[in-house]
Length: 515
Ligand code: NOJ
Image 1 (cartoon, helix red, strand yellow):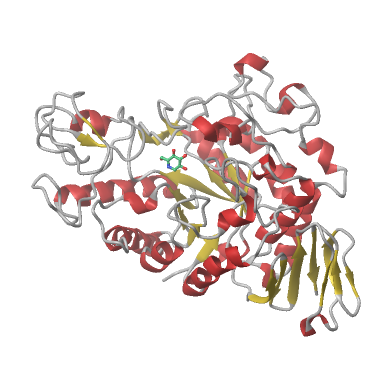
Image 2: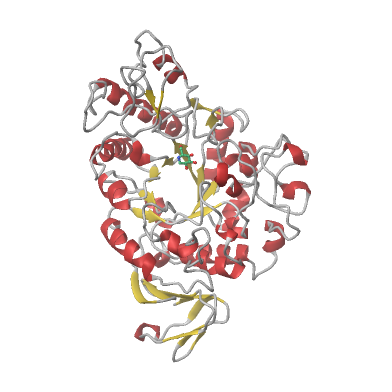
């Protein structure tokens, strides 16, 4: 299998399009706005972007309810603007991944409208329908009574998102298509057609939404869904060998090894314990926060490593685990971590193997805001507020009146901005920028660089990345560490006054890279 070589040194930046930069004063971010901020992204050191869906949509789920996969949503611009973004990004050495939503469309998509007609037609099998309006779909959510078609249709997520039909592995009803039925294959080919459409126009690959959700009644290894993605990967290897795919699957062994994804996200989904939440978001309502990066969390790095290491070992020769600072579905870590805690956390995420993702605004510690749900965001909306650039109106996000903004900006007096942090060498922004710079400068710190845990005891965490050693102490107590590998090393980079003599002395909330 082919591996796009640019992934080795990729550091991604995720952009939620309506909230990054408004260029035309209508209060909503747009593609020209993103283009105008590419120099900022390059200067930060990120060399790849992931854009959340920017396609035509009624926006009942932030654009994850697509009405036309081949058309940019007018509020963000035109297809030509997106092609212009590819071009301007490439000029700066930045790749662009779009968001592919293969599991469902909007219920306003022409495929669905056709599919819900009384008369059978080309799209009748594009979605999952039962053969009777009073027949449900085993524990799956469905809708009945809304269409002239005689049947009920399955949902993949919200009520406005009918499930596309990739077939069922275990078929228990006669209306369930086989995975190799013409209609299931047509759905897969339609997705490949959309991928080719944008790849031809210059996009560099896709983040794949709910990538594990395609085949229903799949086995526990998701082998039928994985087979579809392997087929897609074969297409990319043959036709677009530089294109990359990252999955929202949260199971790197299935996604990478079986499905052929280049990268899989390590997500914060509470129900699949992978250790990630123990780093940043280990709080339940009314319970003490035990997050590793909390100074008072009394953390234990083993709660992360015991889950991470077997997964890392299993996929490391085939693809990457992607750790992120946050995403558009996840509470921003600044909700519970202060600036010093965020510095050590981001420094770790940016020095681990695999391909890291920075969520827009996390480089300045943007906060999780208590705001009203927007476009199906619900609790997630608080992580989707406008980027805070400078001290002009609306922090430079938009020239629109406040009440026309897509979402409110941070009302706090001390809301973080890029401008305020740029000139402060000790800021979170400059910490992130410096660690990214060191990652680019030292191949050992990159996706493929060797990784070996040297010390993992409570809050003490030390790992070797080839010729470099990374150590951190997120706790409130100074830590004094001894290890033979420290001999002959010098401090390359440190957060807080870390000292190296006979021992490595790590003050509270500190981080160091030794060379
Ligand atoms: C995952 C996306 O990240 C989320 O924002 C969306 O609501 C669901 N998938 C449904 O597409």
